[in-house]
Length: 299
Image (cartoon, rainbow, N blue to C red; front, side, top):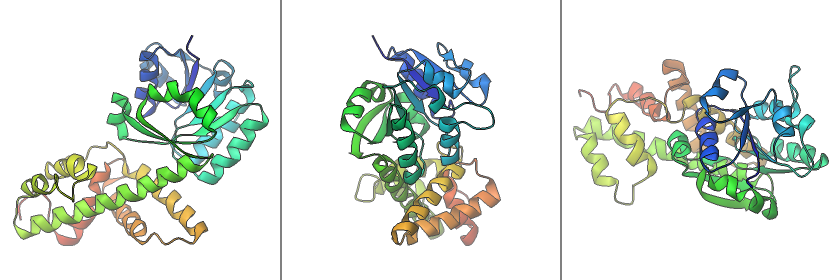
């Protein structure tokens, strides 16, 4: 019989992930700060608090926005009891948010003191990957705990990688975000240069996508920019949160992230002009503002 999965956080990513768990045959008990969202996951049993979700579950998945949100649902805040209060010995807490590796290790200690275990398992693949169940999942924690949780992960993702001890999943996710944001910048610069040079940027994307310059950004975000589609698959505000985590971690390690610093500043321009809810492909708009050209528009 499938273990009962508790799910905390039914946002853009969490809602389709919970639905995929239901389709895979897992009983799901869920809690969300905005209660109405629980009803959107048909078949989910509602929980009254993170603590009650934990008390009714064998595996508890957390998928929320930021470090402070994970701390709140695990430790409790403002009179809402957290996962720790209801955690049963032998349960596994899986944090699939992207947060600080140091905080991850602190929360792991708290969970283990109460007889549970902890996996940090941030994801890549965006909303579409969450919907299709093809997420890439980067897992930190004990190998045996990962094997126990593997059926849960397989219901939500396609590639599951054990990255090392607790905190390693978050570190690898930050590496992912470093590479993603710099690929985004490279694509944006190529598109602006192409447009200003008088060449059709759609043709340029087609020409380079199959060669050494090919990337997920070129194939997926490039055409959206040319079509002036800045709807979010991943929001600028969330990308900025992840880049701040990377810069903070790099500062502690005395590692220079010059490219990330630049992208972080350019995204700040985008946030100021277009808001944090726009898609990350809008990075190009900071470069367009500097050059006075719109990719895909009149030259």
